[in-house]
Image (cartoon, rainbow, N blue to C red; front, side, top):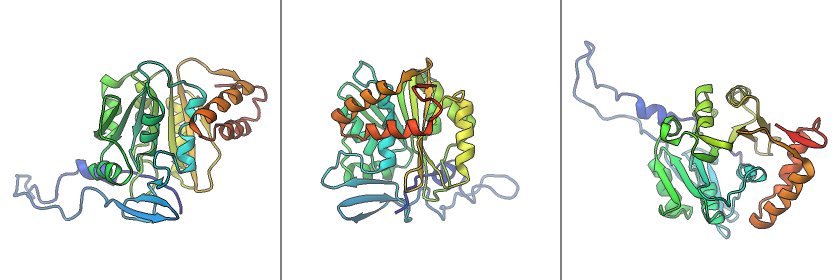
Length: 290
């Protein structure tokens, strides 16, 4: 299956006035029912022990292995945890935020794995939240977990979140799978403003699409070119990491040692992350500087 995620016809539809609410002269008219739903339908499939989330199309929006419901099944989603090479979640007031819930893999993993961290997921479609809890094992909100039914744009533009987030994981696609729903420089700058210093944004992009180069350019603009990009995974997804705060200057062997710890404690393929990031930054032979 090809792995994609969302653009938001649902966000656009939520702001579009219903047809028939005004007459030709501009006067209010009797409100009529919308002929199209606000959100794409949430559907599911299962194959070889894995449950998949869809938005009424063949595109996969998330996945869960039924025998390992708290594990991160998809490779690109695992790479969205590569911030662990640079930040430790074992400090007080550590805050991880996901923009786009999907099948809740990142949300569940962070909540279970990092006992001192607060985890917030922001999702516009209420049916996705219901599916996360009924079909993918997402827990109810508690002292450390908050799932918000909210537009991601509104969340990052809220000044209350400025400088409040350690890690921002962005995965915003819809059923059309035509690129991220929010992809402007203004959005990426707003994402950066939510981050602490240091702080990291990880974002899922679709490599085999014309949305990719413009998104990378805008992310680089918003983050002063402090961006690392993983090679494309076999399903077409590309994960980028963007950094806020002090310059990073670290020897590759230190990152490899850190990867050993991450892999040992979380089971994530952190050694492979360092290998791929090093290959993508071959000119920096001894140290990673960004």
